[in-house]
Amino acid sequence: MAPPASRTLRAHVTIASLAPGGDGVAHLEIGGERRAVFIPHAAPGDVMSTEIDTSRRPARGRALDLLAAGPDRVSPACPWSTRCGGCDWMHLSLEAQAREHVEHVRAALPAEWRRTTIVGHPAPAAIGYRTRARVHVRCNRGQVAVGMNESRTHDPVDVDTCVVLAPPIEDARRQLGALFEGSRGHGEVQIALGADRIPVLDSQWTGELDAKCFARLERAVAGRELAGARVTIAGASRPAVIGDPTPWIVAADGAPLRLAPGGFAQASERTGAMLAGYVAELVRPFRVDKAVEMYAGAGNLSVLLAREVNDLVLVESNRDSCDAARGNLSARGLTGRVVEANAEDYAWSPATKLAVLDPPRTGARAVAERLASSRVPHVVYVSCDTQTLGRDLRLLAPAYDARSVATFEMFPQTSHVEIVVALERRRGTGPPS
Image (cartoon, rainbow, N blue to C red; front, side, top):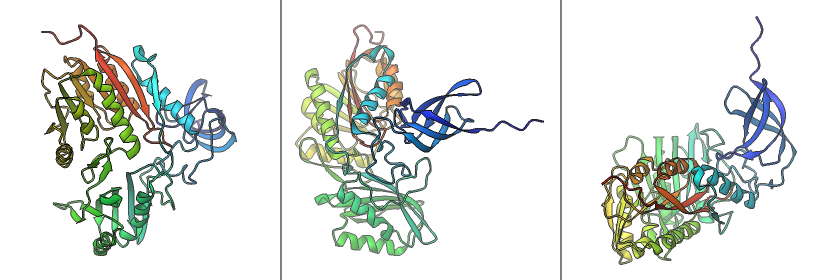
């Protein structure tokens, strides 16, 4: 009996392109078949010595040696970039990152829209830009590891410095090891800016927290190293709250915007404000009286949309975010009705002339299906995932035309990008009377 064929092989490959997930793509003849091979931390034009697992489709490879660098490759600003899963494109020039983002968005658009001009908006800064972070903490046998997940694992990489975090966020990240020392288990910690731009923490913990952890948090708040912390232990009925864990950002109108502890906000405060201003400018010419904003969060877009629309309904499923949105509108003297509901189930008024969507990475398939059979004339879709955006736009394409597409470099050094698509309903495509 012949031995089974090996599922791994070594080969020299040339990277032809980048996949939407960030990997480099090469092509190789394997067993008489032309196969795609995905290789992480690769740049277009790289020539690499690789080890390839042929048992998967597409085949997966890892670089053993860089034989020749492609024209877009640069020296990463962080020595941990090939291990840490946070910045998968730090080896690419910023120009190449922006170009590839645009091409990935173009490829995701319905075929009839791919000639649409895509306008790219660069980031104000590519290092030290993140004003929010989610890090993982693991405590095992007295050792505490704090960091982003290692590439393709769920294990945190304990880096000495994270160069993409804003200084106050990085300072707070460095404290986490000492704060959680002596605990057992693991958790996620969100770090944001709180009152007076002092960091706040929101932790979801599985396991046992050392009792001294709470005393340390109290000292950090008293010493103004933290503005506050909220800690939720798995199985507990309510979180422990120390100080004021409320996150705040500066909104696009220049005023403070309150967020929900642990709730959603854009990774970059400055680019988030740019995006909100852009959306407001998009909808201004529509001159609509009635609009619905779904997945509204705490109102980052709403505080500008409410100035452009007479009757704005904000739909958000998170109760704390709803409370924050009401407070943000009230603080500005703006009107808008905040509805705590799932966007997928919310029945908007038949008089609605504009729908704004800013869903999570999983997209808004159910909402897109409903919009396609509605009479809503204008849609603005904000997305952070090209694949789910493309899926939802294909549902909308039979009824709508794309009026504009823009990218925002919300996540420099990564394969992720923020996208804004403005749609207008095609005449004669409403539901049957």
